[in-house]
Length: 491
Image 1 (cartoon, one colour):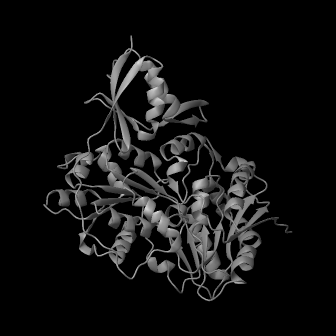
Image 2 (tube, helix red, strand yellow):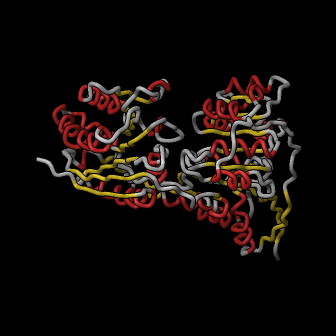
Image 3 (tube, one colour):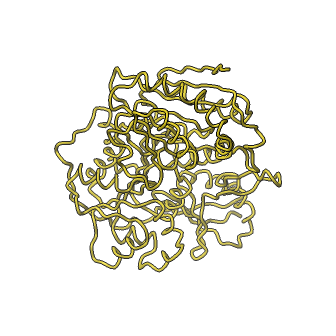
């Protein structure tokens, strides 16, 4: 005889009433393992292990929370073991209306009009926007918040202040924008009677908040109670590809009616993570994903380096930090690499083609490599200004007057808008599509006739580099206006 269990469907998650000692709990765990678990591979012990589980079981309520897009999957699977589900809608909490308007000097660009209409549609709870860097994701999301007229929170993986400055410039919200960054910002607002129109929150802070770690569990409101207390009606998640697990786990505890997800790259690096990601953010909710403007010319260079494969491998595979360490270990090796590999490419694709004030951005992995490359280029190009852009570097290191910028992916790889950037040069061997697309995306269109250049490279002597470039090549061909590949021949 079939039993009946309640399934409570909300805006971002579905809760299923299942007691912990259910006789068919083993089957439910198997469904979770097959659909909501990302596995890793332990190279040392040669075994598969559970890396991340994209669901949450609340022991106090006996509710299993899953992403709302997995509702039908679980419904069908449970019916196969004679568990019928009584589907009910989760009750909404009261949202707070706000009166914020746009600065009249800002107008929608043609490609933003339909995007803003989509994001402003309250009949669809979850909306994704995929615009390439520079196309105006921030503006489109801000205009949608204004149109929806409900208290909002924007959760940002980085550049919190940049978002705040943009909102204050584009709207009349001004001092009604509040930054949630670190514990004290949450404590102060919750110990006051003030309810700002718009919150801009650090993802790192909100991650600790929903986890209840450190002293976050002592705050007056829990993570979900915070949203209800402040009547949050619109939630914007920026750069959702960066910490897909954290953004998904937050959604499992919330019931915000309007949810907007922003990224230039709706994808993940590993096969299992991508499978789950594609279910959580299905293609039908990714507005603008196919509207990609191709204005970058890519040059891929293969070279025969001096680093041995065994020196750059560790238990979990290839390490580019080790590759850089091997390059820097011997001064003459590093000098040869710079003079035969990098300097000719910089000369060809930047020095000899740039206009005044145009810049070059170089990606490396480690801070030590940043300093080493900066020192070498500074001595080689004595008339140019060479700066680093890493954690703690001032914004002036990106300003006019700077010619060459060396950065690491964590700092310069995403969400960074560098004025007059002509050429980007990736020296890192990776096959992660999110990184590749984000680095390419640092190049923003300068004009219809302006040729922007992306340089990439790989070591022909390393099998790991050959595997990585196979993935990069396909992505770069798809995203570029022109693609050229060469092997460097030198004595």
